Amino acid sequence: SVSLKERLAELIPAEIENVKAARAEHGKKAFGPVVVDQLYGGMRGLPALIWDGSVLDAEEGIRFRGKTIPECQALLPKAPGGSEPLPEGLFWLLVTGEVPTQEQVTELSKDWAARSAIPEFVEEILDRCPPTLHPMSQFSLAVTALNHDSAFAKAYQSGVSKREYWGPTFEDSMDLIAKLPNIAGRIYRNVFGQGKLPVVDPSKDYSHNLATLLGFGDNNGFVELLRLYLTIHSDHEGGNVSAHTGKLVGSALSDPFLAYGAALNGLAGPLHGLANQEVLIWLRKMQSKIGEDASDEAVKEYIWSTLKGGQVVPGYGHAVLRKTDPRYTAQREFALKHLPDDKLFKLVGQIYNLVPDILLEAGKAKNPWPNVDAHSGVLLTYYGLDQMQFYTVLFGVSRAFGVAAQLIWDRALGAPLERPKSYSTAAIQKIFKDK
Ligand code: NMX
Ligand code: MLT
Image (cartoon, rainbow, N blue to C red):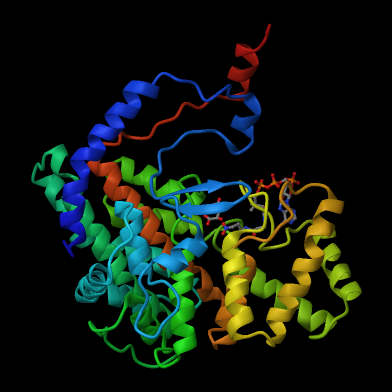
């Protein structure tokens, strides 16, 4: 079938059996001890969630349904004349575990275009936001407000059976993804004064339409960049702040709009998605302090001054990864192909050669290598999207793909309310008093 919903309906019964079998065989097996430091230490390494779309290996980086980024670039359908994967294909892969055909992907592009309009009252909410309100706050407001028309919330109120939860969750998830370009485009134009919003063209792919809404639809390089960008930012297993928040809030049977609005508020933090904005601010400050063609010595000194000032080097380090993020590498390869002589790209390359040794010498960060955010802003800046306060919104458009895919499966598989156990320090001291 070219319909994602029909394909899902075929896959769900077998997956329910698969999960039953996995639980019957492995349900009582331990992953190893939980140590008290994990409770104080942000739960690093604690096996705690099921997330089917992707798994992150500390050394190798992300695999989407078992496929690396280069494999996805090779296998997923492309736009006519394009060479980057279409994020529509990645969504199909995340949801079904299957590489889609060109026809299946074209159907998704059309379906999303047909669902793309946002209610007038949401447009008004955005139009009334002061331009000084951060684009991420506006984004989360608008996504939360989409709950007004949630198919899941309506179905729940009218007493839908648990077995049917996935259907309206699917509809909401598709609506959510489809409406994000119009929300993002409106925020961009309202905040940065870039003219009137055009309409979505059902004959164009999702990234092309998003580029058009932002005012860059005629720029093929930018459209290709968005295809790659939306593909690689979509999912990073389940434990990252935005994905986990979406899953947690969804577990209360809050609909996908409420769940994803919450996820966006997590993505808006500087240690998570906002780091892409912070990288550009940091690079620009560096350039204004030490010039555009600074020596390695001057750049090193600037990096040290950041650390000595008690700040993090944005775009470096990771809670799980211990090597260069393959999403960084994919963007570096894009830059080598399309903007090899760009000054800011060269600075990013220069920093890549210097930061890891400095972080190692400083001796705190467990991972001295760059993550996805170290590179994305430079590419957007090159094509003229140089308003860094907007960068995390684009990350947020993409991350919806991964969160939505899991929300659909959580409802299809009857995932329960999330409610882990917490302890006070006094309780820990009492429990381990004589141990
Ligand atoms: N610059 C300076 N110090 C760092 C950095 C960095 N890039 N990364 C880690 N550290 C410090 C960290 O602050 C901590 O210090 P302290 O003991 O004083 O609290 C120490 O090294 C140990 O931290 P780790 O265990 O290595 O890192 P953790 O898992 O706690 O945090 C990040 C991971 C990503 C929050 C952290 O590496 C960081 O703050 N990086 C910069 C911000 C960033 O790029 N975030 C984007 C992540 C990707 N994303 O899109 O979400
Ligand atoms: C992400 O893409 O979510 C980030 O790399 C953060 C993470 O995985 O923890």
